[in-house]
Each structure stands twice: as structure tokens, then as C-alpha cells.
Length: 218
Image 1 (tube, helix red, strand yellow):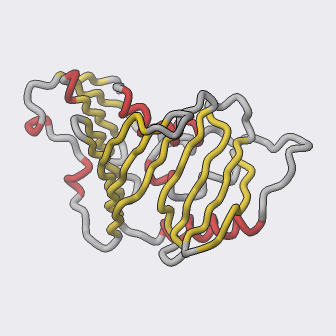
Image 2: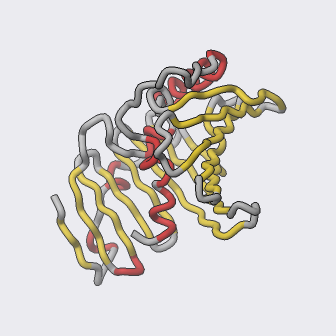
């Protein structure tokens, strides 16, 4: 996949791994942070469907912006869809269609039903319990900042900051710090949890993508 498409899933692919054990001497997580994260996870699970607009900002080690992208993610049960300029992902709960418009290619794969499957839903729920130590950095002006440190030190990033809207008990933004120096910030610009989303939203329709090659990898 192209650069931005890969970046969109950087957070998921780096975080959602098989559960790691906390090595001796690494310390313990902050109970106050866990309490907040548990509430956020439980809150998200009450939503029947979610439509969330996001902004992805990429900065280098000098805090200079080197990339920016906007998109929308739709979620309903195990189904999801992610839309960005020139790129689309559909998941109907069983299959995943990945559309890359610049290369005129659609890749069809089977959704892995194991707990290690990477889905947008997991980004808003209890992703933190097995792979991180976490602490509450600040709780002011309606925003709670929680810092996550990966237990697995071989990961490509060394720190993740999560900013939580205290009033809505939802994640407002996530900032990932790569060891190489780049920082990736995902900000939720708008979230709708009350509108009904049609099941057809999550199913790829070849007629809407003429001239694209479908590569079936199931």
C-alpha cells in the first residue's frame, strides 16, 4: 500500500499484537490511568454505530509538518469502512476490500476472526491492557492525557500519548512517537454516534470502481 495508507494503520499494526508479559523491573501501570481507559472502552462499546471524521498529521523530529490527510471511518458491530482521498477499505464482517485508486487495484482478503485482528473498533476499546504500561500525565481543561509505554522494546515507537475528552469520555486524539523521530497524530474532528448507517456502506460494489483490477487473496 502507498505511504499514507500504511500510516493510517501504523497505530493498529504496531499496537495490536499478541499480549506481552510485563518483564520484572519495568514497574506497574497507574491505576488512575487504567480507570479512565476502562471507562472510555466501556463507553465506546455502547455505541450501535459510529461515524468519525479524522485528521492525520505527520511531523518530523523537529516538529515540522511533513504530511496531512483527512478521512472518515464508519463502524457498526464488526463491520467498518475507512475513506480517504483515493483510498477506501470495506469490511462486511467477513471480507476486507482494500481499494488503492492510484494503482487501480482492489485487494480482497478474508477477515481474520482471531483476537489479533486489526480493526478500527479496537483502537477505541481495551487495546491497552496487555501491551503497555500507562500513566496519567495530566487532567486539566476537560482533557485527560495518558502516556503509554510499550512493553515490547523492539517496536518501532517508544511512546504514545492519548488525549481523552473528559466530558464525552471518548478519545480525542492519539500521538505516536517513532524511534526514528517522526510523530503521527490522529485527531477525531467529529464523531456521530446516533445516526443509522446502512449495511451497504460496508460492502464493496465493483460498479462504483470501474477499470480497477480485483485481486482475490482469500
